[in-house]
Image 1 (cartoon, rainbow, N blue to C red):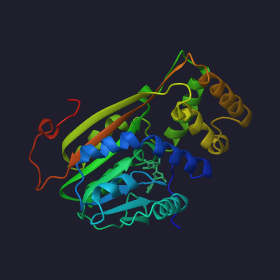
Image 2 (image 1 turned 90 degrees about the horizontal axis):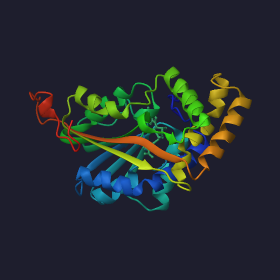
Image 3 (image 1 turned 45 degrees about the vertical axis):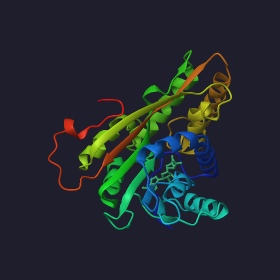
Length: 288
Ligand SMILES: C[S@@+](CC[C@H](N)C(=O)[O-])C[C@H]1O[C@@H](n2cnc3c(N)ncnc32)[C@H](O)[C@@H]1O
C-alpha cells in the first residue's frame, strides 16, 4: 500500500459513503461538464483522484469500448471501491491505478484528456497535481478541472454554529497547507503549466431543506472530527455541541443554504511552445 498523503476529509467509511452519494447527485452536472470536453470515441483519458467513482463511468461511456479510462487513486480503500463498482457495472474500458496523482507513473504525453474533480481543494500542493495533469496530456489534448471554492458557501439567516464550524474547518485546512479558495485560482495553475485557451465556468447551487448536500459543512466537520479533536482545533464536547447545533439550524426551513462556488476550468496543451500573450490565452465561458 502507498504511504498515505494528507487528504482533508480522511479515508473512513463515512467519507467513502459520502463520496458515492455525492457522485450520484452530481451526475447531471458531471454529464454537462463532460459535454463541454467533447470527448471522442476511442479517446484515452485519465481521472486523477477518482475516489470510489469520480467521473469514471461517465467518461467510459463517452470513449466507448475502443477508448480507455484510467482512474488514479492513492487511497487503497477508495481504489478498491472503484474497482468493485466498475466490476459490478461490467465496465470493461476502465482501469484503476493505485498511485499518487502528483507522480502517477503513467506515460507522459499519452492521453487525450486528463480530469480531476474536487481533488485540489482537499490536498496540499495542488499545483503538483495540475503539473501532472499537464504532463500526462498529449500536445493538443485537454486538461479539465472541476473544483470547489469556499467563497460563497453560506447560510442566511446567519448561524453561529455554521460560522464556528467554518472557522474550525478553515483553521484545520490552513494548518495542513490546504487552500479552500483554490477554485478561483485554478485558472492560474493551468496557465502556470503552459496550458492555453483557458475556459472558466462557475456554478453555484441552492441546497433547499431535504437536499442531501445541504448538510455538506456538517458532513465535513463530522467526517474529520477525530482529527479536529486530536489536533486540538476543538475539544470533544464543543464539537458534539456544535454538530448538534448545526444540524438543528440546517433543519430550519427558513434558512437559505448556498453551495460552494464550483469552477469548471479547462485548458489545452499547445501543439508547440505557445507565444500567445496571457490575454490571448483566455477563451472564457464567463469572460475574464
Ligand atoms: C473529494 S474526493 C473526490 C473524488 C472524485 N474525484 C469525485 O469527484 O467524486 C478527493 C479524492 O482525491 C484523492 N486524492 C487526494 N490526494 C491524492 C493524491 N495525491 N493522489 C491520488 N489521489 C488523491 C482522495 O483519496 C479522494 O479520493
